[in-house]
Length: 260
Image (cartoon, rainbow, N blue to C red; front, side, top):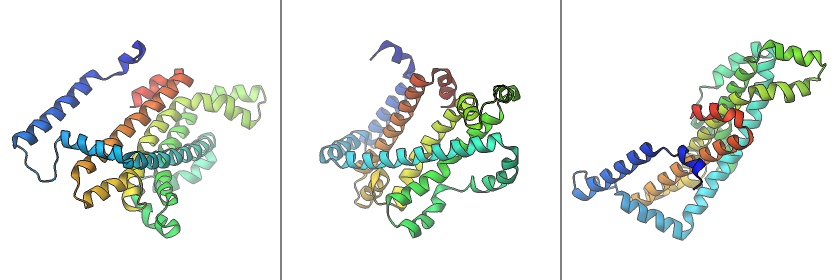
C-alpha cells in the first residue's frame, strides 16, 4: 500500500472492530451468549465463503450496486439542477420551499406501495424508492451553497455580461461545489440504505432480498454474511467517492472528509 494512503486508515477503529469480533466469537464458543440463530463470526465467514463459491453473493451485490449508482446519479442530476434554480431565484424559493419542507421528511419506504402499483416488482420500483429521498441532501446543500455565495460574485458576472448559462457554469457551480459534494456523500449513503429496503419489500433481488431469503431459509450464517457484504459495499462506495473528489477536486476534499 502506498505510504500516502496509510494516514487514512483508522487504526484505533480497526482495532476496536477486531476486539468486538473476537469477543463475539469467544462469547458464542464459551456459551455465555446462547441464541439459537446468532452465529459466531467464524460461522459467518464460512457462510460467506459458500455464497462466494456459488456466485450468489456476486450477483446480489452487483444488482444492489447497479441500483445504488443509478438512483444516486439520478438524485444528483435532479438535486443539483433544482438546487441551483432555487438558490439563485428568491421568487422560486418563495413559492417552492413549503412544498419541499412537506415532502422532505417523508420516508422512502412510504413510496413502496405507490411504486408497486405503478411498476410492480421491478428495478423501476427500487429506483423510485431511492431517488425521491436521496435527492434532498443534494438539493438542500446545493441551494444553501448558492445562497451562501457573496453578492459580489454575481456582480462580476454582470460586469462581464456573461449569459446565465456561463454564470452557472463558471461562477455558481465552482463556488457551491464543496456544499454539493457534502450532499453527494450523504445522498450516496441514503441510496444504499434505501436500495436494501426496497429490495426487502419491493423488488425480490439484490442484497436486501438475500437477507430475507436466508432468514426464511433459517440460514443465519448466510444472512449475516449478506449484512456484512452491505457494510463492505458502503465502505467501498464511500471510499471511492472520497478518492474521486480528492483526485479531481482537491480543494473541496477537506470539507468532504469533515462531513463523514
